[in-house]
Image (spheres, rainbow, N blue to C red):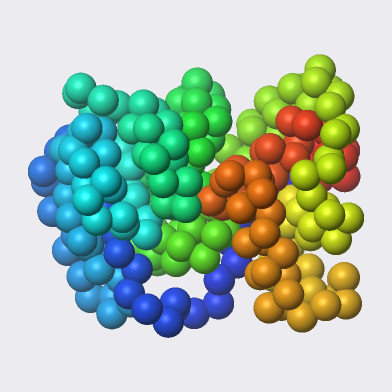
Length: 232
C-alpha cells in the first residue's frame, strides 16, 4: 500500500457545503449540475480565481473546495496556501487536468487533501468529495507513488525523529493510516473502536495544524515518524 486513499462508506449525515473554484464558467456549470442530484452535497458558491475563493472562505467557511490549478490572478497553489493558513480545517480537493509533478507536489505541500483528474467518472468525484469531507485523502495510485518517492527522499534527508507532539497511540494510528487502512481496519488492528480512531485522528489533525490524512501522513513522513519502506 502507499498513501491513504479512499474510505467513507455511504453519505455523510449532513449536507456537504462545496465551493467550486475554476476560471471556466462552463466547467463550473457542468460540475454544479453534476452535483445537484445528490442530497448530501450542496454547492454553496462559485469562484473564478483564488482571490474570489479566499473571499468566500473568509465569509462563509465551506466544507470542501473543488480547486482548479491554472487560473488568472491567484492560481490554485497560491489559493490553497492562503486558504489553509486562514482555515486549516477546510478540505481542498484539487480537480484539474494537470498531473505534472511540480503541480502535484506544490499543491500537496500547500495543504490539498486530494488530487483528482477532470476526466474522472462522476461516481469517483462524488466519492472523493465525501472522503475528503470525512478527513480522508484521495490520491490516484500513480500520483501517490510519485508523492511517496518525493517525500521519502525528504524524510531521509531530514531524519527528524522528534515525535513528542503526538502520543504513542496517536503515532500508531497515523502509521496505520499511512498504509491506506480505513478507520474500521485501523480499529481492528489496534483493538479499539472506529469512533476512538476518529477521535485520535481529530487530535492528530489539531496538534499538527492540518485538516486531512494526506497532510498528516506527509508531515509524519517528512519528519521520519513513519517508516516509508513499510508503505511501498
